[in-house]
Image 1 (tube, protein in one colour):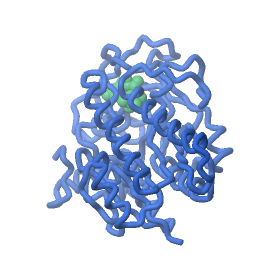
Image 2: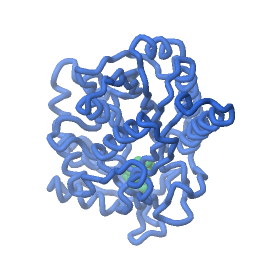
Image 3: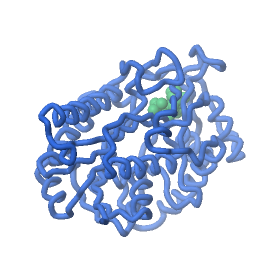
Image 4: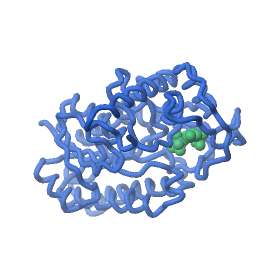
Length: 348
Ligand code: UDP
């Protein structure tokens, strides 16, 4: 049976990569995206696209029936940590309230399989790294809280079906994927991150290497790490997209609800990342030292054993050089996209 998957945020960065992989694997895909930060051109032609808020319960419910949707992958959401600190209500409205409306639409229409884009931000500042899924979840910014709140809703719904003695074949199941730092682009330069006003390190560094920015700032050089800058676990977007396809297969074949880290299990400092982008681009863009950014934990690195055990996921692109090269190549391609009518990014 060919399943139809509803992908919210399918015009965005990770959503578009995942949509493409789902289509290649043989699923039908219905993309729901309000184009707040996504781009229509990033949605593969074989996907059905509806411009809509993922939190519109009635309209999403109708679409689920019309397209006979059996599973939902929920990417749509705001993702910028510093913005969540300065405008928390925006994050609770979109990431929590809209997620609830979407989950309700699924419940109303009998969709039982749900994959959620969560984040390593739920851990806050972990007591030790690498951090595993059993570690305490104590977010240090509203973005992290908004992701954790949605995880809780999903967990409570999963539990309620069991408590209410629903037959296993009718129970709601979900996989929450806790992303570490997603970066990179398709190796052939065909797809990548086009989010306007990017704030994420590798994207910003590639923009600097392409001359789109005069300089890049290092936010904090006095952390308790080897070179004083923050450490993150950077994961290639294609590996992350494949984790979603594997999670979908897992749920459709009867797997129980899971919370899984998505990272490689080792980290790089901000200085190491900037050095790598300079190396692959051969551009010595200006780097300035700035004060700490609110909401940043010093180090976040995934314990990756569980996702391997549960889904059989093995990284294919665990290589910072490859991540930075593909991101840089994509940044050049974006300039061409800007010049084509109808393909401009919102930043353009
Ligand atoms: N960072 C930086 N300069 C930038 C963007 C990010 O120094 O222009 C740092 C940021 O403070 C953090 C790390 O790079 O320590 C990763 O930040 P990013 O925004 O990419 O992802 P986050 O970890 O916040 O999800």
